[in-house]
Length: 144
Image (tube, rainbow, N blue to C red; front, side, top):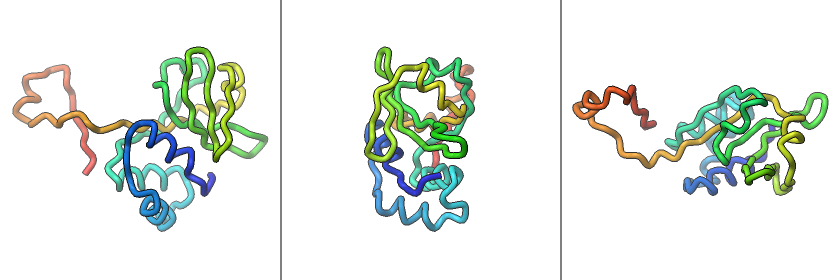
């Protein structure tokens, strides 16, 4: 895993999520699992940023939101986290400060099935009394 988090910062900025980058870097570097993906997700949780790592088959790429982070194979042993934005037919793939426009077939060549998603948590939290009135609403999660 890389020690450069520009891919993550760019994703958060595009999603309209503000945070203190220097504090984030301090917190992630002091995490016992640094620099792993666990350190990234735990640090995002510390900043109350709802996130999740999921496995996505390459055939389901179209089901992903327009922005996400994917861990792409760049060689035999190197896997790089990349910020990916879907544009109609092409994908914009950014790692560090380098951005490439590629096709879905090229994206699939480096696909590792691991995706990090971030959810902007701006929905109001339902009080417990009102949840009973919505049988389709199984739960709401607000990170504290």
